[in-house]
Amino acid sequence: MTKLTHLDDSGAARMVDISAKAATRREAVAEGFIHVAKDALQAIADQAIKKGDVLATARIAGIMAAKRTADLIPLCHPLPIDAVSLDLAIEQSGDFGGIRATATVATTHGTGVEMEALTAVSAALLTVYDMAKALDRTMRIDGIRLLKKSGGRSGDFIAE
Image (cartoon, rainbow, N blue to C red):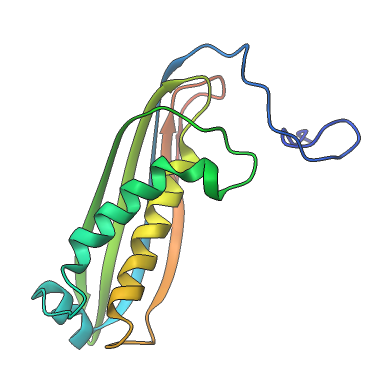
């Protein structure tokens, strides 16, 4: 069985020592989806939400969250983020649809940015919920996952 890197030999939580790791280019892509009722989704698309432009605000929230991941997730290293992009795409199907968030985060450092990409997606989708909850309290966030990562000792990963 693989040893958990955030536990020491006695089982206590610890921050992983990355000081001996080479600084290499690392990138991660994550996605998630928020299901939104058709009327609320149309209001978001039309920028008719009283709180403002939902997609623009969610994009900024996601980017800001990626940069602050170490403040939110215990034992994450604070990283110099070289780039963050966050795409928000409205998808409609019948009476329901939603918004797919896809975040790409890059750094040149000794550890990866998977948590930063996942945090960006999570914060963006939570922002959509917050801004549109007056129109649809049935919204559901799901499917948050790592799509791919590159760089580092463990190599590349692509989700199936």
